[in-house]
Length: 238
Ligand SMILES: Nc1ncnc2c1ncn2[C@@H]1O[C@H](COP(=O)(O)OP(=O)(O)OP(=O)(O)O)[C@@H](O)[C@H]1O
Ligand SMILES: [Mg+2]
Image (cartoon, rainbow, N blue to C red; front, side, top):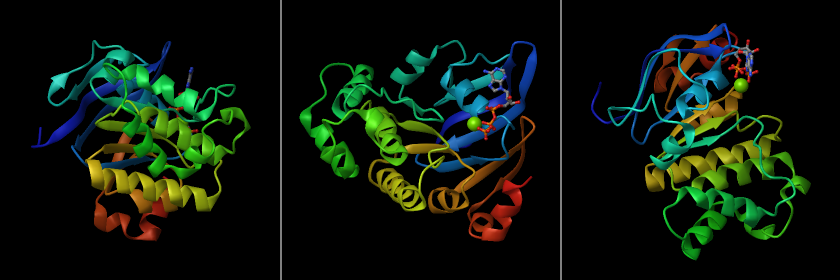
């Protein structure tokens, strides 16, 4: 394991019932990195995120956090160790207000969350401050996505798993969310694993990227490869 590795998998396999999806996934993410996982629909990206979070059991292989195996730990225990997860499709509580949704995120903290933490989140996502008393279900997809991310950030994770944050969101908001996440990464050292198919989001955020196909990692792109639009576009079509 290279120095500074925060999360790593070796030989990870997982699936649904008798149906295998992940096949021997090996990856390693260093503390403070923003790493993307890309690939076509149905290749297993969300399955990988769920397995990292402990929402889906691995059938083989191992996940380590700071070098310590976390395979036996359910999702809420991983969350307490600082792993945050924003699922594909966001899943905010539609009938609860913005602030009430954020309070749900508080449950991951030991003890009360200082008001200053809310102020920080609201400074990062001003639209949420404006709409703090609005019911989440009445907001746009982009606003709900920001709320879903903010709700996880209130728990102060060291690592956040973002599953297709750009899905169904207009390009200007995609760009804004990307910039906010990069700013947070720079300011706090937050490590980010980003599942994406949106070329602009990948290039705006990721420093490195794994390409998945049929449950396997089939390529790894470094910063140089990522800087070339056509290269990334080609891999997105793998
Ligand atoms: N709950 C489930 N039960 C059974 N099979 C599932 C389940 N969720 C996903 N699958 C199957 O597992 C495979 C991988 O799905 P997964 O959702 O991980 O893909 P993905 O790369 O995230 O796709 P997308 O880009 O569309 O989100 C697909 O064949 C999918 O149909
Ligand atoms: Mg998915």
